[in-house]
Image (cartoon, rainbow, N blue to C red; front, side):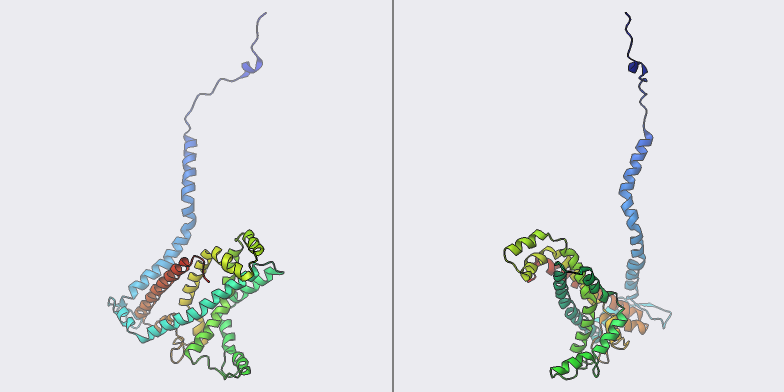
Length: 324
């Protein structure tokens, strides 16, 4: 009896010849190129805008600071570092530097401490948490003009609410605009009111990432809320604290709207320049059309910001979270 091959073997097609796969190779290369080049393509618009509106103005300002550059003359004479030499001997410049540092310290230190405390309170289980968080952000989105106008009325000498409250405790009326210390306090209060809630939300976002098990263990051990803030929260959110300290320092060094409007749109910061900041000093020289000198002041302020931000960064990192 003759044997018959199975049907499945008879129907099996012969193996296809091995062919080169250039299309698959090209597809693989395109995929690798896409993976490596796509991130740079996505961030390229930012760097192009940064070069156009960041690096170029910075370099051009440095070039202008080396010239006697004024709009009153068509000739811009190259004078080298003479603007910087004159600047170092300018009492108005050092007065503006002192005012900037004073307002920065008075406004930044209490602001950050209050922001951490508010964030710690909102990090607990509370009713209407979303409402409280939105309320903290409202001062930041309020127009700075409206803020300064309202606070200027509150700090008014004759009819201000602050002096009216002080009269209850027997204190006399204070002319907040006239004195150096009083004007710095008034301007610092405006800055604190605008930015405390915003920084509190940054701290709160960092606190949300702290493991709850740490707080539960601390509660079992008998640690109170303040102890948990000192021993757990602050060390765990130290990177955020470093970031907020640096950004707050940069913002404090660049303050201009509050002192400008507090002095009834005066670029001198009061009759005795008692609250003229570096930004106001730059604005005053731009108003005088002395662009070369104003550019030199801008670069000096830039160097101050870099140095102070670096010092703050080193100090906050050295604390290792032991800020108490």
